[in-house]
Image (cartoon, rainbow, N blue to C red; front, side, top):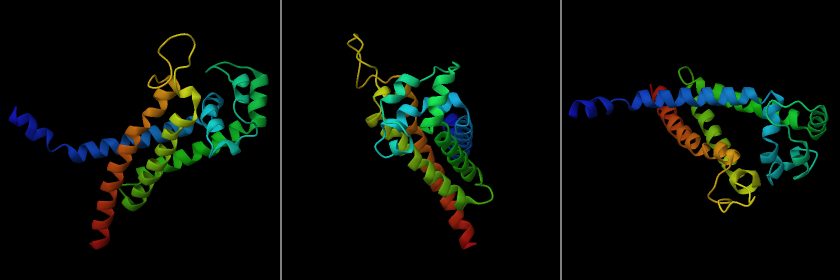
Length: 188
């Protein structure tokens, strides 16, 4: 058992690198998906209900509820509404920002200072995402007759958001490690 702990104790660096790779994969993949209509529509409840972001859409919440497509569903009238609402344009911009943050973090081997800045931006993005637990009614199981609704019962949207606690922690770990390497290189 001692050999196991001796081995595991040496995995910190590998864990940090795996964490960084995980952040990059998630950010680039999720950011890239923002270019597709189903993903753009999926974030509408978060943006429309956010007091700091809702101005980016033409229509106020809860207007969007009448125009939501299920994933994979094609309704031209809803697509037209989302185009008018700026749903897709906002999602394209957000996706570009998210991919950019992922690329910044991926630059660690060459530019650790830039990577640290990317991790800092990821931390901030995750903090904003977690605020949706407070502002977005769809993050909690609705009161539809079952006694299990509201806090602490996360809906699918809420389960999507809560994972950002891990993103925050991962971004702090990768930021700190990249900053250490950046400082060592500056002193060398």
